[in-house]
Image (cartoon, rainbow, N blue to C red; front, side, top):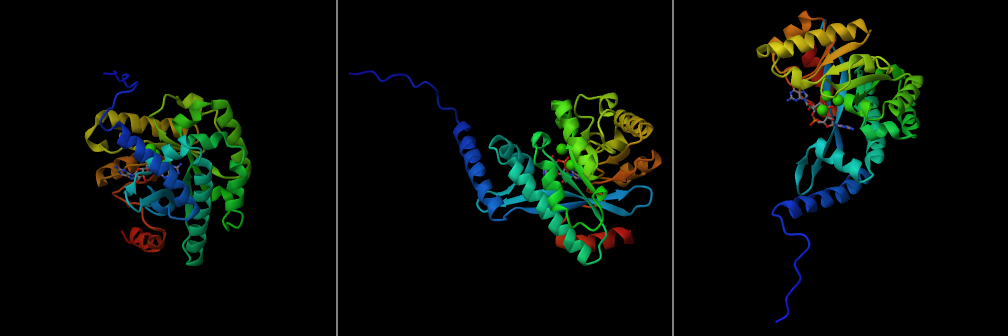
Length: 277
Ligand code: C2E
Ligand code: CA
Ligand code: CA
Ligand code: CA
């Protein structure tokens, strides 16, 4: 009897299934972008001193027709791997601009923050897309904040700096997201034309019970203020955390204790209930 050759790769349970899922998601994401099946949710950012709603952060959502909710972390990663990230970012910029126009039409005055992917920082057309999406924005581009993660800035600091400078020429506000999770120092960040720093939620979630987190957050606020940066704390899940941040002079706060991300149509109601608190 003839012997069959050994297969080169052995079957590993789970591997093929997750690979198939990725391929399906990559292919379906094309359709979802083209046919407008993605939607945006918006999470309030409040002024910690006054308690007022000042901004909302746009967070993209995808409910897949068969697979249900897909986390943005999963499909943004796949968009980056499959060359779709710039289409996705351009799409999101336009969606957010559309939602913001709707709010303005019902008299809701709020600025917006949009997340950029690390790969957007090496995309020459980015500045043009931002300018185009918000060309008719009534409030001036300084009321658009773009959030870029600390690790994205440090991947290629020179290129990041060039892109951020171009964005600053438009007038947008720049924010460093997930601060504290990368390996940069404030002295490196000081060279970037950024106006805001967002302390990562991992330092904020258990703030009241973790003395080390308290030390990190408090000293980050002080140092950032010393450099003339505004500070945002994300991941505020309790009144205690809110009070501590208030005591330490943190400028803005965001988290489930204040509000979950909401659909754009629900933002006017959410804004009213936040004021009434
Ligand atoms: P991120 O930019 O750090 O966004 C904050 C994430 O924390 C959001 O998760 C938000 O729902 C969640 N969050 C807010 N408050 C709390 C809280 O009090 N407790 C806890 N445990 N979580 C809280 P989400 O929407 O799942 O987004 C995850 C990540 O996906 C984002 O992290 C961002 O990196 C990325 N992402 C989301 N939307 C976009 C987008 O439109 N474009 C890009 N490029 N990335 C996006
Ligand atoms: Ca963010
Ligand atoms: Ca963050
Ligand atoms: Ca994050």
